[in-house]
Amino acid sequence: MVELVLTAEWQKARQWPLIVNYHDLDGANHSTSYWIERYRKRSGAEIVWYTGADSVAPQERYGGRCEIEATWDDGARLMREERFLIVPRKATRIHGRSRCRRSS
Image (cartoon, rainbow, N blue to C red; front, side, top):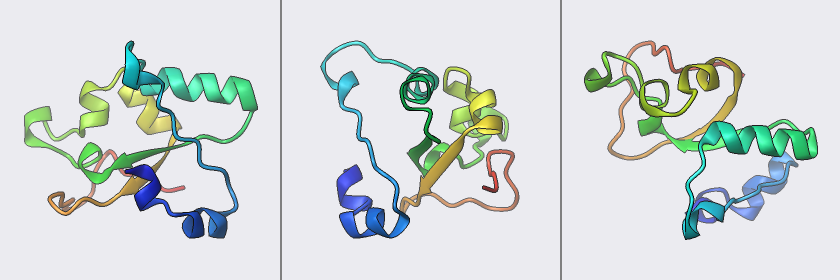
């Protein structure tokens, strides 16, 4: 899915590598926070995490917070300190200002 959305042409225009991690597919699941720290320590590079717009849309069921803040391990810190590449999804609408939005 990631390779379909972030095409080679798109990546080339931004001149930064895309790393797709398939490690969690065959067993243990690790948090986004775990992977960001692991890649940062290994490479020293800036990490930009890819996620769908539904993850950052404020939701009533989370008291107006987004899924990342409400359910992800270390979610509030991730939203404050990390960079996300937000990919729109047809069913997701984000109205007004969200605590989950960040400028780069």
